[in-house]
Amino acid sequence: MPDYDFQSDHRPFSRVLDDIGAKDDPKLYLGELVNAFGERGFGALMVFFGLINAIASPIPGSTTILGAPMLLICLQLLIRRDQLWMPKWALKSSLPRENYRATIDKVRKPLLFVEKLSRPRLSILSSEVAEVLIGLVTTLLTLIVMLPIFGGNLFPSLFVALFGFGLMQRDGVLIGVAWFGVAGFCIFVWAAWALISSLFLASAGWFLEAWQWVQGLFA
Image (tube, one colour):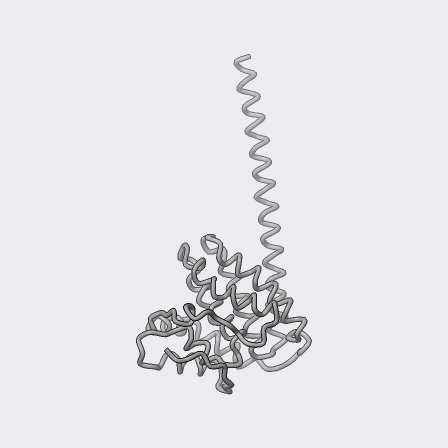
């Protein structure tokens, strides 16, 4: 496994992903990912783990494990660390490179599409203050991702990935889209909860009335 070395790299993000997959070593270490992403560490790893969790979200329990490193990254963004830190045991963790290639193949087309459209703009949405707010909301989203909810962590994972891509590219439009997505997701969850609560209360009321009617028959 390569040593952790914070470095600059001007290759397109998609090219970095392809180069990682092209190596012969059957194991892909987290330390290798950190090295490869270099100065884009926070945003790039948010994209990577966000997409990984989105793909794994239908598998019960998988996002609880895969969400842990994403949570650590988002917390460091929240507290404004200049350089991404990972514990040594985490850097030595690995996954089969073949599985990595299969995952990248699944997201290649949308990733390339977004990459072609993105460019530095609306810098106010990627400012230092904005990064703290993004760190806060992505931390909360990651906590949702880590809950054992079947399919319920798909959109939070994608939002984390979109925030990460926006930060990596310094693209305020992508970050703005992510904020609108989070707002829409919150409204949907609130509306769904309100509907379920009202149906539950109505059902409880009907059950109580039926029980009282049954009691009346035998009174």
